[in-house]
Length: 114
Length: 117
Picture 1 (tube, chains in turn red, yellow):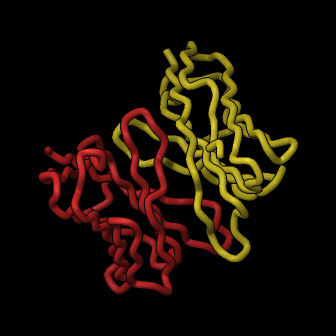
Picture 2 (cartoon, each protein chain N blue to C red):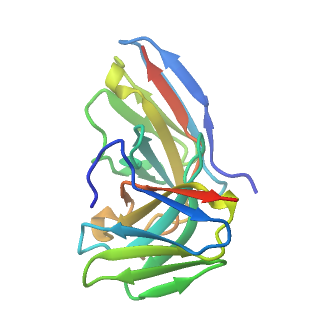
């Protein structure tokens, strides 16, 4: 869920494994979705985005899947590396008059063990 | 090229004081955004500029918060009579066009960590 709090979901994987980070979004009107990576002390870094007319998009080592029926977004990272350790946020944009506003999810802490 | 820059990186102030936080967007980006991030949470939208004008300020928590972008480039977030609850990381982002045909990618700066004692 997207409850607010200090206890973020966590995912621990071994180097070389594939990682899947999930996100449930709230607004059925959202038409643009983004995944950001945030390392400690830094701003969010863009990873990949997807628009609502697609259900899958691939980048370098990353794939985003969108299921609008259940309002679910996932980020798959192939061959996870220690440098992938960070907090990952999904964000949604409702478009229309709100097209400047991103709504972020709670975040997931990914830890990659060498 | 240069990314979004924010100054100062850290700001410590006393309750009741006035602070200004500065954002330099990526050159050529017409849209600029301010977000606030509390510990353990995702960024929360504050305000969005398209050019010089505030297109959406629905996220500003109260009238102590104000932002300007007089020449359509650099922006300043101003907080009056700061309160301890204002302590957070203030993030700035910019994007190339800012909408019209739909949302475009927002690129974030490193943030300013504000601590109100």
